[in-house]
Length: 34
Image (cartoon, rainbow, N blue to C red; front, side, top):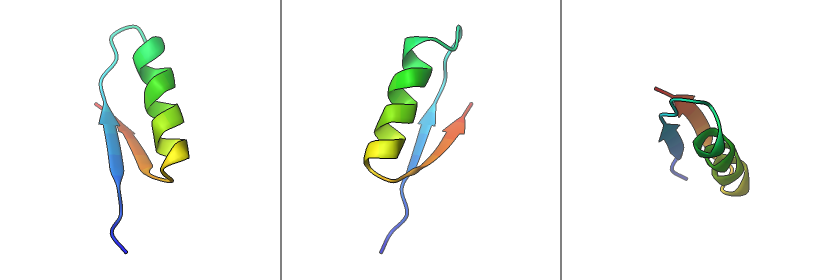
């Protein structure tokens, strides 16, 4: 089984961060912020 990584960049740590967290949780992926 392959591993999945969601990588995101958010200037204000607002909507982008929340959506990235939700996506990672939904697909059971690792999460990384740039």
